[in-house]
Length: 185
Image 1: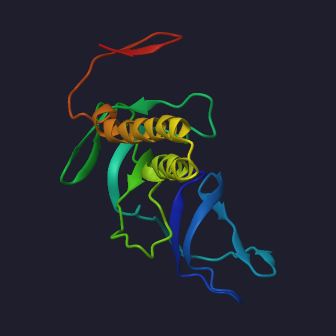
Image 2 (image 1 turned 30 degrees about the vertical axis):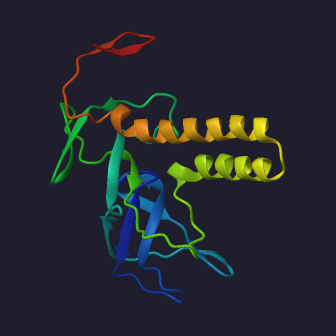
């Protein structure tokens, strides 16, 4: 177990149901701590139960894989990987790690309709700038609208290109690592 992992807890009991999916807040030897927040505060439960890593939601695309949480550490080892029908596979896992920190996009739950209020993050910037361009056009500011529409198109192209620029291109690359840099050759 490691800090930041999400686990499924089962087999405990108390005044408030302590079983479910929770994030580990502290790890010490073979004991880990998680917070169970209720409407009145945080309670601590002890006892024997089972804890297994919670499965991640359906993945649309894998972006990067790290040994540890890159948001908590200044430097975290990043692994090369490939994806097949079974999921992501880490290449050259010399330390035989059994758990990794995965950066990924969730699978789109769609379909979106005219009544939908959630906009996929990939299209958010495009939608905002395109809407603003329409507003400027209706306001008679055609030059500003054209510039803003160009910005919207650029944001859309950035999102389209992300599929090509992802780390996972299913080809092995040689990495040259020095103290200050890391390059692909």
